[in-house]
Amino acid sequence: MTDTTHLEAKVLLLDHDPVQLKTQSDFCTSVGLQALLRTAHDALASLDLHKDLAGVLLAEDMPCDGPDGLHLAQAIHKLRPELPIFLRRTSVRPLNTAEQQTIRHQWPTGDMEELRASVERTIFSLRYPATLVQGIVDLTCSALKSMFPNAEVVAESPYVVHDRIIHGEVSTLIPIESTWCRGYMMLQTEESALRQGLLHGMSFEGVGGELNFRDLNNMLGETTNLIWGAFKNRYIPPQAFANQQTQVPIVINHAHKYISFGSPDPQLCIRYQLSEPSRRGAHPLVIVQRFIFNLHWSPEQFAEFAATATESGPTGELDLF
Amino acid sequence: MAHVLVVDDSSTMREIVTSFLSKNGFEVAVATDGRDGLEQLRSDPSIKLVVSDVNMPNMDGLTMAEKIRTDQGNKGVHIVMLTTEDNPVMRERGRAIGVTGWIVKPFRGEAVLGPFRKLCGM
Image (cartoon, rainbow over all chains, first blue to last red; front, top):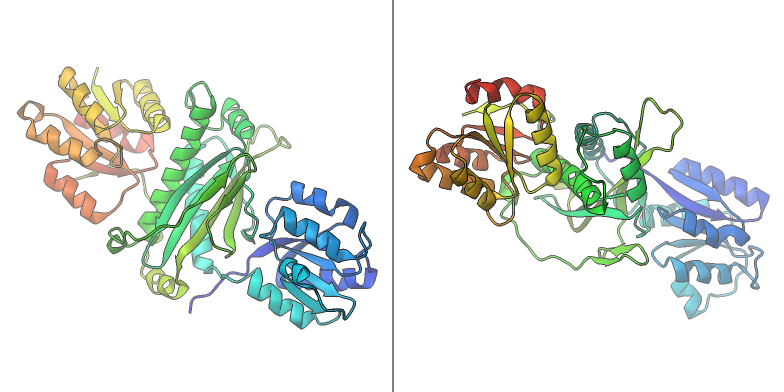
């Protein structure tokens, strides 16, 4: 078995009891959850602001418009059914059928081991090998630097998401198939930020055409191609190329910025910040990368393959035959 | 002035390569896929070097290279593949076809300027 990296994840923490709030905040820190503390009043608005969540921690007796927190849970579930809700029980009344469909995990107050097990089973159900995550970050940073040579590229800490909300207006999608995985890589960014970045000279002089949306699509498309090529050259053995198997439909709803791969498994998510060294403090261009291995995932096979994979990247030099 | 044909379905890559080569004394023509590349080459006998992507719609770069090599009139044209592909099987196919060289993207102009000048007799 290969070493896996303990990725972080963002959750909404909705609790009113100061003691429980402290206990759960400490718990979140201990398991790698970044807790966003919110009240019942601003919980739904927070969903709009945070499109990369992994779940919701909610107290049953949370004061809100309804008689208890379960009404808030149902409102959250209606908006984002892909987010698991972990309900801290404060009563012993059994949940009815509708409530059970909304609440995927309930845990008695004080039983942190029960919560820990649920979080591990649900939010961190896929473990990504540390060498794979670091390799992806390295090859992506290299590709971004080559496409945006005048930008400073910083990769934020990788984390997992359960949300299916798209970041920005421009996104690309490319299949990833190897002997050890089958799935997709997505790149997503905001059109205006990409345009501003190119206007301020992040890329090559004269590249980007008129910077209309087609030009910007092409820019992100070529960046995707570079990352995909580097990933393929490092992690996909040639014998996998002929491995053409069935696919599942990918559902995209642009009006609602929604995309589904048909799998509830967490997606590997990494955000990259591109900023102009001469304009410190300016809003950076954020590019979001996700890997979705929804068709096949075998970290054991990855471990065998990784042992022989070379980590040297392309030099860009002409190799004369 | 040495004449280079850049073949890539990505307008961004065409812009990057063309911009660099033009600044460094090359005259550059562009094509959007292998089929377009063949037409450009047939209509312009002054082209000395073809720099081409591999994965393209309509006609891929290696098929285009194969057709260039089977055309007796193009024997003096050098073909360099500029691609994300680093697959040894594909490289070997290129070598067998008569491709002059292989570059794995990203394109780093400074790394290829000298060899390109040499291939163009500059």
